Image (cartoon, helix red, strand yellow):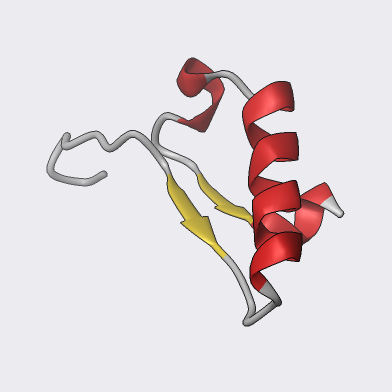
Length: 48
């Protein structure tokens, strides 16, 4: 950020079964736009 560089978002997660990860990713994709993710770090735990 201090260098003025942007990124399209970083998504982090704890180790979870693949089915649960997929459900959370789908919830994220259905509730957060690409613009809202820009330059953000988000945890999949937010989308339980």
